[in-house]
Length: 153
Image (cartoon, rainbow, N blue to C red; front, side):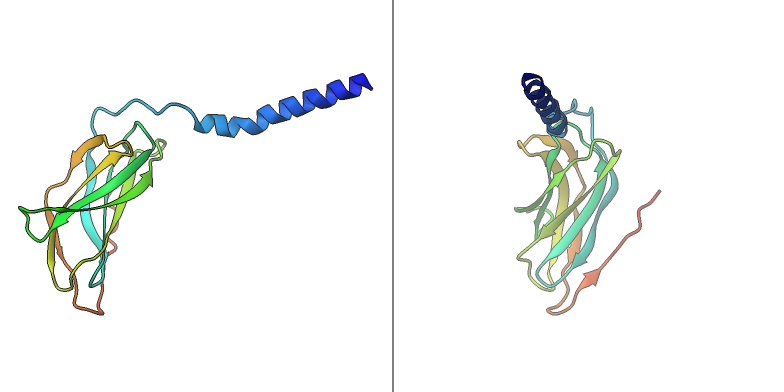
């Protein structure tokens, strides 16, 4: 009977270790921060309604923490970018590039907005990349703009 209990406890211990392995793999420390991150596909308006817009861009994959934020800093004047919209993203370090996408809410119809994009780790540390200022105009009420630019390469 003791041998059976020993075998059962050993099996349970080994099984517990095997089940814990995926969780342990996710707890590895973050990779070393890359020397620099670069935008490889410039920001563009993906789509817009009269009160929301989606902006996307692609950058070389930042390293460090996998938890990041894509950010659009925008406003009605290129010299007054006073609003910020951001979206959470989880970086995949196995990919050389990362597509960032941000939804901007509470816009006004038929209004031109100016914006630039950036990204940062969840702890607030910048990835050190920022685009030039771009612009888009929201459509009239009830209409929408749809752009699906094909990746260049």
